[in-house]
Picture 1 (cartoon, rainbow, N blue to C red):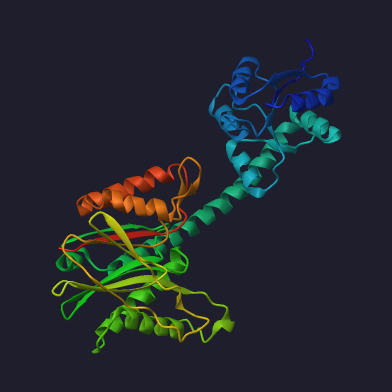
Picture 2 (cartoon, helix red, strand yellow):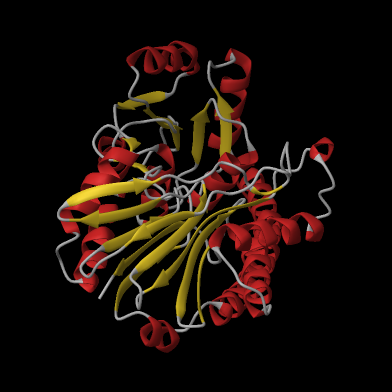
Length: 404
């Protein structure tokens, strides 16, 4: 019986790397087979059933992890030992490789002795012992991963419950429709819970509306939203005459006290940006005060921007600074918009740029003559088209109100 000559399939899209491996292994008497990509590697593995596959991870079209998975899924070649070749040595890469079915790892550039030793060991009977050890290690990693998965599930369940609580304290749809005849609220949290919130109330025939963008997003931001909504409800419940600037002053004082922010030396920037309007449709008057969230008013196809102050609802360098109260006449057909910065700051488009303030203003002008529900639909589609392939970076909240 003739002596079996181990065949080694070397898979690498880099010709220099293939030649380097060939130079180190050719004197060992192996039958060397070469593939330049993952698709060719799978075909050659089926054709030659090599004793070992030396597989590079970083390849275009199909990386080494995916090639490894496809080989393990094919019963005819599933047992071929695979050494993954990579410059990566982090734990995540190793876990990914083990999950894909790799038997061993080796780094580039090759060490001559290490490469020869590893190849020789795996192509002989010791391969089975090594495979057993790797599978034991994989089982340990799997148990750790399963434990983490359980923790993640429990945490996600808790946050989902927090989402229901947060949603419950927001103004309910029926209440909003009783106050506003024409409106939309486009609300898109980055995570399960949001750091943006909207709030409505009615007092003495005046409609009071606010949207806010709290520090952070996710769970930290959500805690701030609960404080903001609770404080606004307290303030409106007081038996005093209120204007938007007074409401913001009182809100700031409550936030500073609640977060224990005695002065700037604390270096705390927790707080919120906010836009707050009081609409008197009987006298057709509007009052607005805001922090970093302007009010947009469109009338006769022209956009007017009522700028906000810059003093955060929270710790300030000068707590004595007062918020400006803006008073405007309104008329039927006016459209009001308020938006957190999530929309204009969202990256996307063909050049991976921010949506920008100017583009957002143009969008409002383009949609304002549509029905409010249709405006929301267009905003949603515009954002999705812009974000295509990109991750949402912040909570997004846009509110539109039609004066009728």
